[in-house]
Length: 167
Image (cartoon, rainbow, N blue to C red; front, side, top):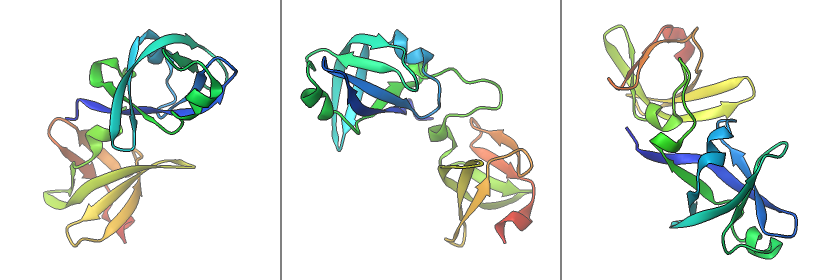
């Protein structure tokens, strides 16, 4: 399993003192207020930043990084990905998974391997699994209980309940 993954994105500057908006990819934000350092990745460059202040705001939390003291400096961080270690990420409830843990899982129907999960896409009605079939084709399957049975992250396999969804 991946030990570090993207959990949020840095958004636009807020105010005059260098605060930025954070956009959580999971919708959970409480865990972000406990962190004193965050790793930001912008392009292929990663940098560890010290959190100077964090404020709850609607619709997204605000964070000020040490050394970022103006809207202009904050704007340079816009679009950066926030990487967290697994232990710092939002805790999972039963039936929830980190997207990074689902990537690469083999999908079965009975004993037959159909393909692997290549991505999870956010759709208007929920998440979609991008399934790369053994043939090389891809299909999108709603990540819902009606279509997926047992999902075993540790065993790296997921059960597809209805093959017809691939037609």
